[in-house]
Length: 144
Image 1 (cartoon, rainbow, N blue to C red):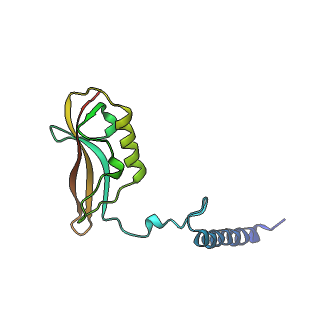
Image 2: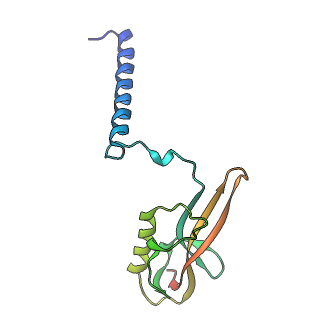
Image 3: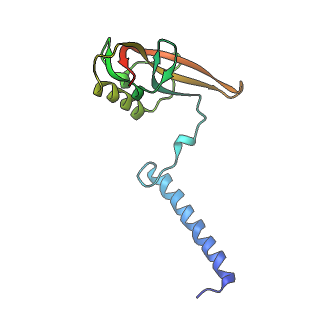
C-alpha cells in the first residue's frame, strides 16, 4: 500500500497520463465517439440563428408555441436559402425540428404570422448584437 506522501504524486501522474492519452487519441480519430477534438470551440462565432415565429405585433416566439399551421408554400425550412452576402450560423438539427413541428401540426389556424430565421449578428467590438429577421414563410397559425 502506498504511503500518504506518495499517493498524491502517483495519482496526479496517472491523471496526466490519462489526459495526454485522450488528447492523442482524439487528435488521431478526430470525431469518433467517445473522442472529440471539440472543434466547435476553435473559432469565434460571428452569428447565431434559429427558426422562429413573428406575429403581427412583431413579437418573436418559438415555433413550438404555435399549432394548426397553414402556410402559403411548401414547408422546407432546413433547405431554405440564405442570402449569399451574409450567411448566419445555424444548427441543422434545430432547423429540422422546427420544420417537423410545422409539418406535424397542420390545421386551420387564423392568425397571420411569419416564420423567420431570427439572427443575432455578434459584434464584440460594439458590445452588442445586431438582430435581423429573414422571412421564410407566410403562414396562419393558432397559439394555444
